[in-house]
Amino acid sequence: MQHEPQGALPVKDLVSVAHLESDDIRKIFATARTFKAGRGDHSRLLRGKRLGMIFEKESLRTRFTFEIGIQDLGGSAVFLDHRDARLGSRESVMDMAKNLERWVDCIVARTYKHKAVTDFAKHANVPVINGLSDFLHPCQALADFMTLTEKWGDVRGKTLAFVGDGNNTCHSLIHTAAKLGANIRVCTPESYEPNSKVVREAETEASKNGCEVVILNDPREAVDGVDAVYTDVWASMGQEDEREERAAIFADYKVDEELMGLTAGAVFMHCLPAHRGHEVTAAVIDGPNSIVFDIAENRLHVQKAVMALLMTKTPIDTTGVTA
Ligand code: CP
Ligand code: NVA
Image (cartoon, rainbow, N blue to C red):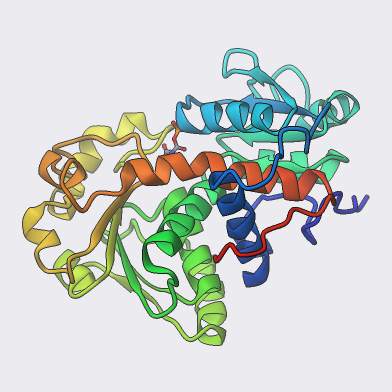
């Protein structure tokens, strides 16, 4: 059964940035910047709305920002952590979705399998937000590009290099860059490249928006003259057993001052949590070009915008806010 969108966005859910149009992303940013600037009183925008949070994996940023975000807008949240949220073990995701939709107005799911998020979205008659799956991390990429938009005014024509594992964060960054007209170079060891379907689809999108998606294996080539360098952990949640093996394979992909020196004075980005001395040196992440905490702050604003635009059609006045 096809469920209708309930808010001001043309989609019911935020499962993937690939499902949004460029203008939807710009609308999310303008709304987020309105909230961030404290323009207007939005403290009752989602009054009485309840958010159900189902997290199979750990979280600091995503949990805090969704819980605080819904409270800021007048709603409330119930959080179920990984001890109680072993999806599919006690009951199917479909049955969970059909229970939750009777109690809450929106679901945020953080899962191992991406299919668990798509199943929530398929079966729940309320908006479902992907709070990270093994395949995608859309809220992160939206906060990343909101932050770059604030720094640069416009991301069109700028170039971001992602150095590391072609993982969930990387996939959502590829989607978002291609939608917004930013060039993206992804540099991984062989066999750790991003999903080829994500790359193919983003290449088509990028060609419409006047930018490029380039996949490389040489970090020095990847960062040459770029405006932003991004990295993420080498072993994501669920890959803890591969940590040592990956540390050896990724050793040449560490973002250090020498690599940053090859860029055009690039900003440094990371979704966090970070491992200093592994994927990035302390000098870089704690240095003057690091914007990692600006991004973390914007998780709050961007997710408030996503919740508001998925849950209500109430117009939000963004006049005068550039995004
Ligand atoms: N970046 C991010 O999603 O952080 P958490 O895992 O702490 O939520
Ligand atoms: N790629 C990381 C992102 C954490 C926010 C992971 O999935 O663990």
